[in-house]
View 1 (cartoon, one colour):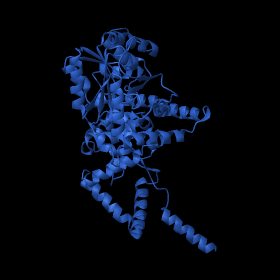
View 2 (view 1 turned 180 degrees about the horizontal axis):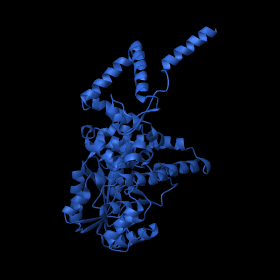
View 3 (view 1 turned 180 degrees about the vertical axis):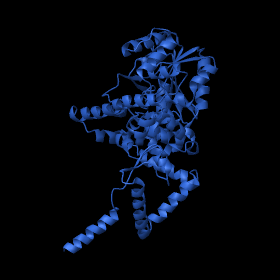
View 4 (view 1 turned 90 degrees about the horizontal axis):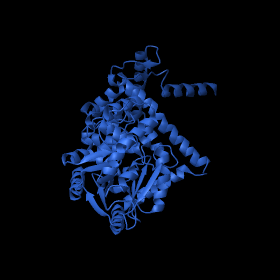
Length: 479
């Protein structure tokens, strides 16, 4: 998927002006936010669990893996090969495309069914398969909706069609399937199942992502809410798993800890509808499973984060909680971010994987309110990472000179107490004059962009220093 992250500001403006999108986002976002809160509450009250301790345990597992990533990957490869799988390592998206196309040609594949894989989005895999004469069919319902809608990219890592309304999907199904228009959700999902069933039964190869891979057993764990994941991985004679090198976990016990965090944080479920643990190829006497299993373990910028200030980002388990709770994502949706991963985690990952010079606005697409850090199940300090990216932009002179000059001037003033007090008093009075007795400033001339799409609260009285000085004088007079 080609990055459009450089156009975040323009795309965000378009999304804010899209009235139908705004309605769709408002209707969808509370489901995830309220769902997480309820699931965490049940874990504490019904099970007597300590969710904060569970988050600590999850973060510790992820840190243990990352600190010895090469060791755990070697252990996983050894076990996976013992079960009959083949393990490949991909440096980037081009490697992924070449490897998958080569596997398809080796086995005479004409059709591929796919479970959700964000890494295949990173690699623009569908286009490569089509160019090689192989038909790719997305089978996750959200991904399928996006594919038949002119291959529109997903807008959310868990709910790819998060931004669409029921009526939009109904129109799309009627136009694509050539059947009477339906608006009842069970009827619509049944129609999708009927269309996709033919593809499941006729596909030669299945491609999936991997929520986790387990070093202890050489297994891949898939966490889904639809049965398509199992159809993709057990019916075709060839199964290809594409996942990041950071997704390895040491043991099955570690996996169970992370599985307590993932669905509660992402979809607000105690456990997802389907948790599949797939190990090796089909053995003699087994009725399903692939004859050939391939793991493609992808770097694409991940190894470079090890040992850096951004290493905590490798803890990410792709639950989507940060974007679900982010006020910026809630306002503009996923497509504004311009690449595979939206929201706070996407602002960091896109900058790191594609280059901060190619995503100048994304580190600034945050209020730094820390909602993302508060809900992250593995305690990734996302606001700190976003600030770190902003600092790198300044150090590399990637920000406009006027912005850098303003920040340097402000930093110098802030180190001069008397001057700071004077500037504060002048600014306070200027802002109150702009408000002209109102509680909010409609247009601020010295920084017009701040008030193009919002009003700025106006000061309602003296500065803190002035109030403090008055209090001290009053106390002195009374004593």
